[in-house]
Amino acid sequence: MFNKTAIGVAILALPGLALASSGVGNGGESLGKLLPLWSAVPFVGILLSIALFPLFAPTFWHHHFGKVSAAWAIIFAVPFLVVFRGEAMYEINHIILVDYIPFIIVLWGLFTIGGGIVIRGHLAGTPLSNTVLLVIGTLLASWIGTTGAAMLMIRPLIRANAWRHSKQHIIIFFIFLVANIGGSLTPLGDPPLLLGFIHGVPFFWTLSLAPQMFFMVTILLTLFFILDNYLMRRDGVPHPEPVSDDPIRIEGLHNIIFLGGILVLVLMSGTLHLAEVNILGVHVPLQDIIRNIGIIVMLWLSLKTTSQELREANGFTWEPILEVAYLFAGIFITIIPALAILRAGSEGAMGMLINNVEHPWHYFWATGILSSFLDNAPTYLTFFNTALGKLHLTEAQVSAYLGGGDGGELLPQLETFASLLTAISIGAVFMGANTYIGNAPNFMVRAIAEENKIKMPSFFGFMVWSIVILVPIFILVTFVFLR
Image (cartoon, rainbow, N blue to C red; front, side):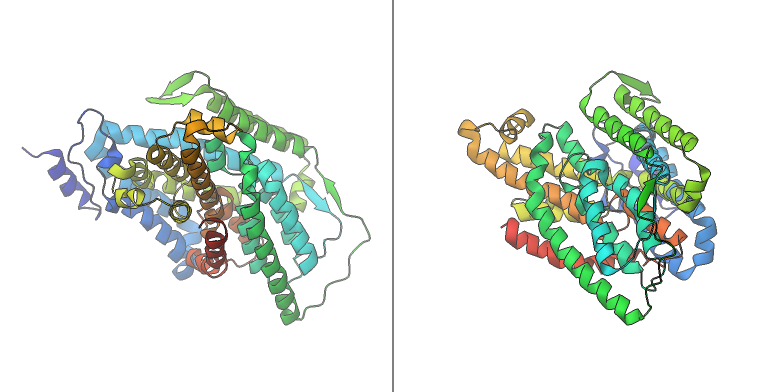
């Protein structure tokens, strides 16, 4: 009689995927301790599809990217369900109900509400005005979230530069600054920092990340201004005369109320601890359900109270959010093994990496590199808990110390933890800029830019930009702040 391992190998050989299943069913043992790294092959497959199909088969990709995403999800999910049965069904239901649905609802809400705010008047699109717009977006990101700031600022930036020939670099630096690094200063800025707040990190502790953030921002803005000047002069295109003398003004400003409503709902879901509702075997916190319904209400109110003319002035369509929804449905399903292995910590297939993370710069690079390709929130939490365990501390002790306590006899360990938490936090937030999937708004910004006929780099092309520009600055951050 075949055991589960033999059945699993036989079934998974058909799509070319192998999963280790020995030991399943032993009293709720974590899947993450059993799965090998190659169980993430479908996840790698969908990433390669996103990277290569637009280059080598653009027409096919444009018409069938949703089917490709679904195919990779099926290639993973069917064998996973056959081998792991109840455990697999729970993991799939959990990631859909707890992760994917809230993710897409928040993006959908911010995308819709941001699309109803129009900045009128003459926006110059010069290096100076572009830099000012990037500064505004970067500062907003910590207070209305990287996604909120990105959806609010991307269309005005695109319109301001409609006359420019070279525009790709503007969107890339926008992703670096507004969609990622700008979200460093509060838990509202980026999901991993909100997760830290939920686990006892004081709300305003993240302001201590200001030196690292402004170090990054100053260098990036300087590089951008130099590069934008050079490219504008190289193109040799004269700036068009303004079509009117109308001052810059904002219309659809009432949507700020709905944007604020989403931020309040997100913060509420991270602070309240209400009852849980059992949905398909998954315990979903009631505050999360309230948040999701509330965001849909804010979205509906924005649609009802904003004129179609304003949305048309923004070039608003549903295509970017639909592309994100289809592709990330596949990404969230196929990422299950990678996240499970990560959650298993030292007992999973990445145990060697986690066990050898000791110093702040180790935490910065380990958290950052994983956050570039995986969900940065669970990555943050994994290394947060790793640091707690290695220093024999509790969340309550850390919360009291970071909130202004003296630390007592635990002061040396608490000081060490604070330095490690700094490294974990900036790694998770900063290095989300390394890839299109590193942070939620990255892919959305790319989709909006392409909808507006701005040719964006491929998945790997974008990584070339991040390696050339960001990685050297990350090395500087390591030597200046994390030695």
